[in-house]
Amino acid sequence: MLASLAVLTAALLAFHSAVPNTVGRFGSLLETFLPWLGLAVPLLLVLAVLRRSATASVVVLLPAAVWGHLFGGRLFAEDGGEHQLTAVQHNVSDVNSDPAGTARALMEAAPEFVALEELTATALPAYEKALAPDYPYHAVEGTVGLWSRYPLSAVRLVDIRPEGIEEGWSRGVRATARTSWGDVAVYVAHLPSVRLGWNGLSSGRRDESAGLLGAAIAAEKLDRVILLGDLNSTVDDRGLDPVTSRMDSAGQAFAFSWPASFPLSRIDHVMARSATVTNVRTLPATGSDHLPVAVDIGLDRDSW
Image 1 (cartoon, one colour):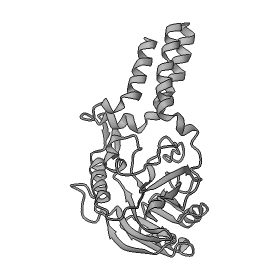
Image 2: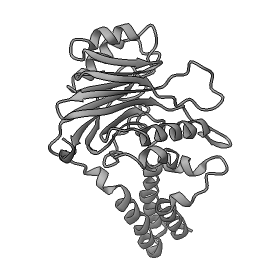
Image 3: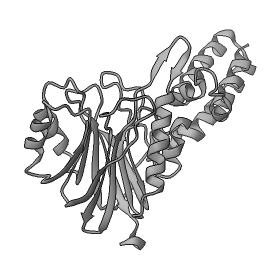
Image 4: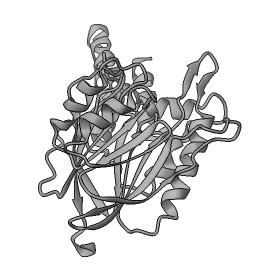
């Protein structure tokens, strides 16, 4: 039995994409928390030792090896070296009681770009006032916003509204940042939330929104693109394929960002095209239920 469970664990890790998403989107659910499946390894090993089963002890090495192949590198992710930009992504929470303090905390990382989601009409002025001295340029659409050290132009709404969502739901913005290394298209997005119930994962609207965002990025005429946002899933989830297939997703570190009280997954992302995202890390907690995520971005020298 223990050996069979070990083989099953290894199979789920190695072939997670084969788990169907047709009923309850269990494939996406598994992939959202895929790294945590590795916890089965020490549990099975302890049980094998208690049972004094040499066969089970050896077979447990199989899921351990698969987990190490998939995620071992994230345990020892290093600084990617030279970079030109730093960006911070943060879902600030619409019930954050200290927006000014949150803004000051984000500035500690000295980023060139700051992306915020769940902005409210009452909190927005506090963020604008706190960020203005260091970030004189900003663009806001609905509940998402971008603050920049560099001038912004061609600001527009990115429509990622799933079918059936009422008018006025605005969670995407795009702007051209005129940096020292040329123009960069910067997107900020907040995909719909998912719900976990007795019948599985409810992620249809999130997946539809990801498809619309992916199409917008595919149509982007500038070569260099930076995407910041709360995408409500991890880079391992196939539901984000329309986005992750077009971007460097910075999957080389865990940097779990949600929930802030006990982070289990990184659903807050900074991704790039014609650029390299490195050194992904979380910042100290703010008044939000998400941790801020900071990354360094190295621009492709060939496109300077």
